[in-house]
Each structure stands twice: as C-alpha cells, then as structure tokens.
Length: 76
Image 1 (tube, rainbow, N blue to C red):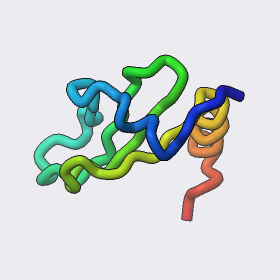
Image 2: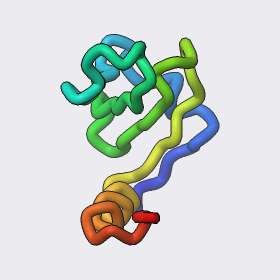
Image 3: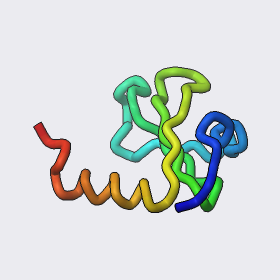
Image 4: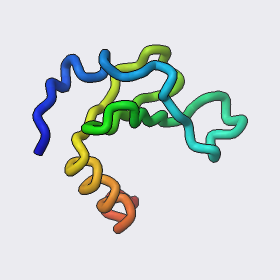
C-alpha cells in the first residue's frame, strides 16, 4: 500500500483535473467528481460544494471499493 497523508494530499491535486460523469447532465450539479491527476491516489468529492473536502484512496483501496460497488455490496 502506498504511503500518503490524507490530510494534505488533496491540496496537491490539479484543480483542473476534476471530472464529472456524463450521467450528471442537467441535474443542477449534484454529482460526485473524481480526480486522477496523481497516479498514486484517486480522489472523490461532492460537486455541489465548492472546494469540497475530498475522500482520497490509494490504488488498492480504490480497486477494493470499486469492486465492492460492482458486486452490489452497497445496494439497498
């Protein structure tokens, strides 16, 4: 697992690299944004909050989280 400081890594991300999914469309900006500008981390934030705090995952953590989503572990 990579070593990073979750309290400061988000400040090192490229502000222009935040991306919204195409499904966001015209829903008023209520989306989750992702930032892949650092090859060692994946950052996620709430688009409706300007300069929102980011959740930061290393690549292993992200792979585990994305896999759990695909498997439906968080479905209600």
